[in-house]
Length: 436
Ligand code: ADP
Ligand code: ZN
Image (cartoon, rainbow, N blue to C red; front, side, top):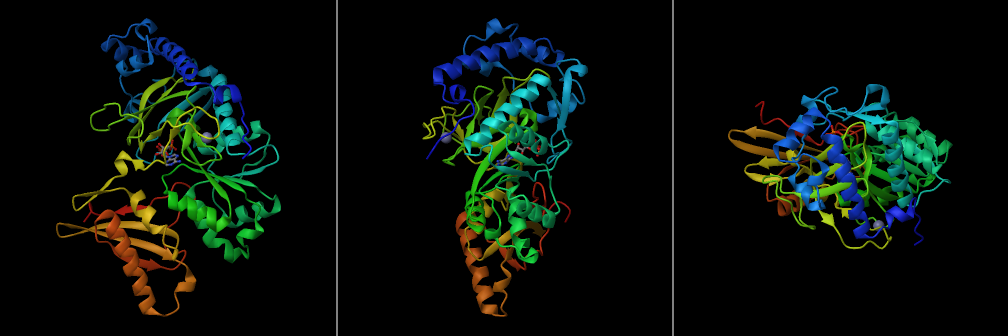
């Protein structure tokens, strides 16, 4: 496979060089943070008074963690390090788990972020010849404008369509012979279920690659989408607190996402104890942004769960890879005492060929017991009136789920389009246990 790089020197730097650069940037970050009231108090409390206290990368451990609540409590400008007139862009998080947090970019920050995205895009094999349709929501959400700028920098033909209006999306794909999409996996699944009504077959499209991100999804969902559309799907990870997309991206080998370690320090911790975990062990992703002037942020607890792969990658990039995100620490469901991540349920059902492109996890309470219903859309051709075939399918899904999550779910089969769908981040869980 031909490997192309955006910035080969940085992408293939040897480990000692990456770590030396990280240390130098970490020290600058500490000096920068000491000029800000909020961080200064925190750093002084742990005895850090200047960058002289940071002698090696291990000293990062002395720095306190920061969490989403710290950003919320400092809303709107408490964590701004520069004059507002030096801010050229404001973004915010989507607010999936509460009040959104705000993020500021200076001109230099924009330039750095855009470069990380250009690097990410080129790592998937895309180039100037591609036509890029960005189906992520524009506006305050970083998924829209972030990739937009990165794709322009690569020189792709960018179609800034934004989210929603499925028929128009498909028409644009055909009119402009779109070759690359940026989209949430749930929306790309949904689009497939609508293609027939637009008299379009996947073969009528020109899509070769898609960037999937913004929400957790399983490997089987990736495989399903690759198969349904005949495409290569690349995992893309980021969060607004760390700029947005472009923190980690898959290369052509699709074996985990390279974290751009010249710009971020990655740690994985035990979410309970805060202890740092070795590579390969799953825990909470903690990120330090090394190159941001308007809003420095170190040791940010993302609440996302993943593990690190430090094996060399065949693409030659030396930046370590992050596994698929299993979910957020607060996504975990406790069902009759058993811990389950929605992604575990998705992983099972998306491997069943009869299952279509949408599902919903519905939790209720009967007496003191939790009841788990998994509602899945199946392909309409399966609704033939043959009840025993449908019962057989239900039993098969139930058994596969039970074997994986050790809970006996109720399975409901639905026609395509019957369950609620989203055009941005999907809401896969309806938990009505509290209210009942
Ligand atoms: P919010 O935290 O309000 O959703 P963002 O819009 O900044 O705000 O979204 C970032 C979050 O989206 C990440 O912390 C993560 O939980 C999720 N996310 C982003 N990319 C991926 C991905 N490739 N796989 C799984 N989850 C992802
Ligand atoms: Zn690689």
